[in-house]
Length: 142
Image 1: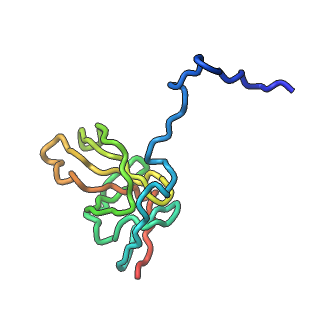
Image 2: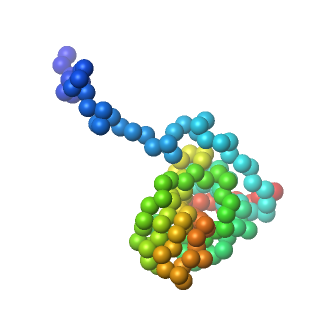
C-alpha cells in the first residue's frame, strides 16, 4: 500500500539542517553523573521522579514567583540539577542572565539559576537557584 508520507530524500538531496538535534541536556541519563542521595530533616525532590534536588536548609526565601506560580530561592549546591545554556530573560524584577535547571533523574525543568542580575539591587540572586513550587516535592529526610 502507498505510504501517506512523502518519500525520504536520498543522496545529495538530503538536507542535514532538517535533522532534529537533541540537546545534550536531554541525552540518556547514563551520560550524566550519577544522582546524589541527600540527607537531612527534609529534602526538596523532583515532583516527577523524586530525585533529590536540594536540602530544605538551602532555602533563602519562599516568597518568589516563577512561571507556574510560587517558587523558592535556594543557595547552592543543587547536585542533581543539570543546567541549560545561559540566556537573557526579562523577569518581574528586571533583566537577568539565567540558566534553566533540569532534574538529572528525568530531565524535567524545575526552575533556573541566576548567572547575572543587571540591576544592582538584584545581585544577591546571582549564583542562587529558583525552584518552582509546582515542580518540586518536599519529603521528610532521614
